Image (cartoon, rainbow, N blue to C red):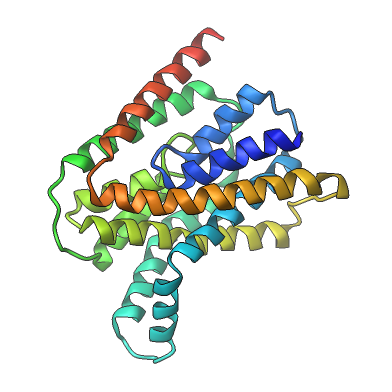
Length: 264
């Protein structure tokens, strides 16, 4: 992989991890356009590096929230911070189950299935459109909400379904305040990303050689910087109910991907 390709894919990952347009779907489309023929193990390492970069970007953006949550947890009381952490754990369960027991089945949806990605982008577009029409409230995330949003996150493991789009849209459609929906959506994914990285390391699924240092570093920096700005921007967009623009974008890209997949 060339360094320029790594930077492009890093920027794509950083933007699409937070903007509701599906990072996995765009990485699939980007790899198809760039003609990426790397071995699965090498591609997996690069993907893990990019996701780690966006996880760090999320931690940086929400650093005050995370510090407050940790301080609340160490009080060892059933306070707001402890309850929020419990909701995060609940929301992780569906994705963890899929990741642990259905990983091989999930991988079958990847690997250049451009048409499938296109149809999933249309699903994302519909969710965003519906969420943008929902009325804003001051309601917070309940425990039952956390489970439902967690199910949406599990479905978003499919390429083309935006994780942030699915979780934020589901939250808003459940009547949750848009700011709280965005905050919960971004914070709930950090433990999953870090857990997945640890699992891949322990499983020995990641392979590294010195020749890949250059493009891995370039991809990491590109994903981190673009991810930081995309996360900040997305919070403002959700607050202002501007998700319809992304619904239009996902519709256009989805239709292009479908036609490209059918007629290629």
